[in-house]
Image (cartoon, rainbow, N blue to C red):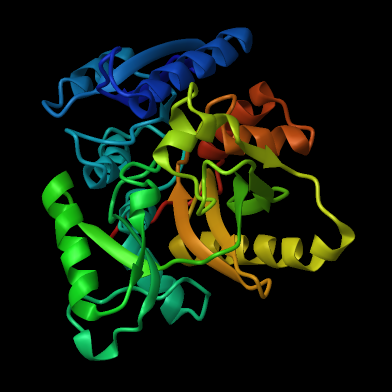
Length: 334
């Protein structure tokens, strides 16, 4: 086995696709540059739904796969099979296991697990439970999509009745042809906390806050436009900060504690990000747990690592070292 050979595996992407899809190609290129600088022999490979990538992997016989697969055959949920395929091929891979990817891709399942464990997450709109509907502001978003797909100002609604909520939910599902869910919308600040595995335990990085300036983003949310459309005012007026006041210290400590609990509860590995909203009473609410989040040089995880003195090259190498760590144990069972 060539100990210096690494395959960067990503989903099939068209070069003229939407920015959230093209981003994975840019990320693969950035990782390739790191590996070349570190004297590895990198190969990029697309995980196609026809499984032609499997004989290609066997032929390359890499010592490790850097797993960037976010969708498989167009399905976000199906991407969770990739670590299982690699385990069958006896090839270590970066990031989380099948179990963790499967669990965290389904946002309803994740929220239910968090709630059962007593962790704060905004209450769901339960379409099968009209008797316990609570009027108020809700956000409607896809159950399984990441990268703020399907999120816009239209996602946030003031809902007065169960029937109105159900009608809104069904209209989103009809328009987008994917499952949606609704949760109570938390008015306030938005944070994310990145984590990196070290010997199986998480290193919790310093929290980042998203600052929304101007008047173009009334709900102050990380929607698709503010995240991906670089020419838009929403993108230009959405910025990350690591600067806080002394009064924020208790909150920041709590965010880091909650992020670590999410890591342990959902069995994350490698690297991850937890997204929060913090309400006007300074109460944090867990929005999402992201296994294998964006790891581009200009992404949130790389920014958090750099804030703590870890260069992009060092970050990539730490993730690779964690993937081949002798003590790392993967439980891929469901």
